[in-house]
Length: 108
Image (cartoon, rainbow, N blue to C red; front, side, top):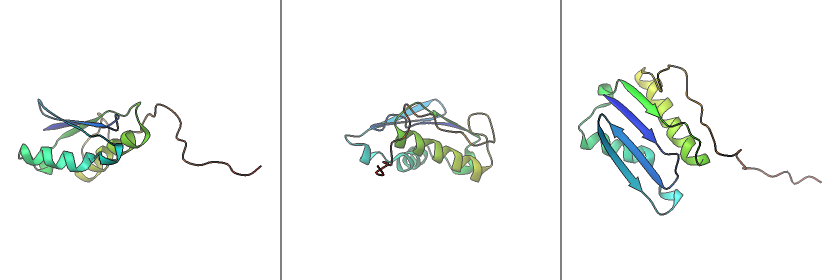
């Protein structure tokens, strides 16, 4: 079974399992729970981890946190299940829409 994860929009998560598509919209980026939603979708479809044979993830560009979370989940699942992510055993790297701005240089 192939799964697809797209969390590049930090207010929307899209999961595809086979030919079925699930979407969850949230009001705040803080409410985006990609892993929880993925687990829910797998439970609905009665899919066990060992049933997954490939993973596709949208690496971006997109929001910094949303993109990073989706790619990290896909890479972790690929590693733990020993399956390809985006057609490769090498980790997928996120593509951000802009450089992260997570620190400031306060020295002057």
